[in-house]
Length: 70
Image (tube, rainbow, N blue to C red; front, top):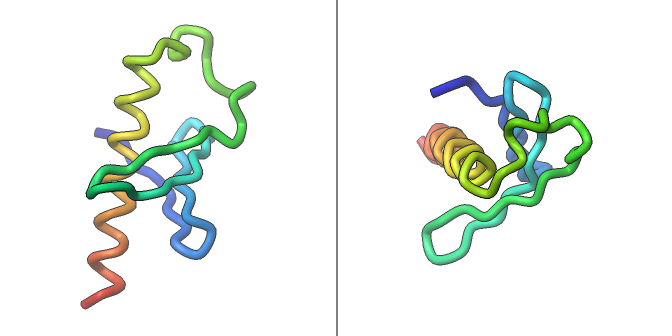
């Protein structure tokens, strides 16, 4: 698992590689829209890889939300 920079105000998660997702939570799961798709390496453009990236971003985002609620 990599590290993500989370911005709760903007509801974004940015990967160590600079790929940024705008996240929304629906039914306890996070959905994401990539804000800079041109920066995604060609090898990572498949749906499975992007899905894993969004899932991982959601995990880090949820962690930051929990910290805020403490």
